[in-house]
Length: 200
Image 1 (cartoon, rainbow, N blue to C red):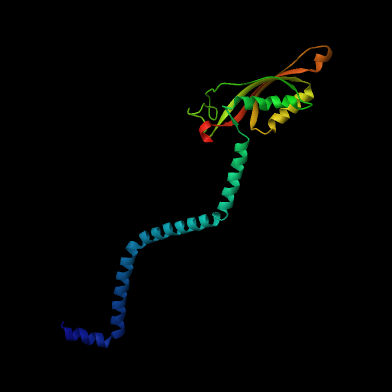
Image 2 (image 1 turned 90 degrees about the vertical axis):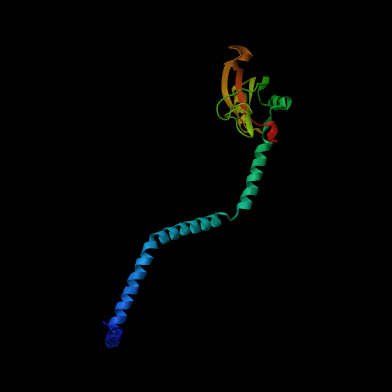
């Protein structure tokens, strides 16, 4: 077979020869492209995930500055309601102020307890389990009053200016007859949320 014979056949059947050459080129292109297709699809899926994440973050980012300002105001309100362990006189006076209000119990004694270690949220500053910015300050208190006065004290403690809870509570009657029959002696253990000294 010589070159002249091949050229004559190409001229004689140009469509068939062009179709065969085109088919060969398409098969080669399909083979080359097919090998890298799974990698390109995986890359495309990763890029689409990133685009969706960026769009979701952009949608959720609206109003973040307003949210941050509101959150800082709320933290400020909480900080205003915290006690400071080192301000023992102010802390104890907070409870004795209830004695000055009409219709409330007579406060017999209030003591701020020493720092004790404990579980999460109760550890002494610097110990494992201690909160990073806050601590619990424990008080023991004793008061006397009528049932209504005791309930009023409990309500005021719960809804007062400071954040606290009553961890233990016991009542005993002061007497069995006469004016002491309606008077109750109340022993309380109160936990108040306080600010750590270096969290000021």
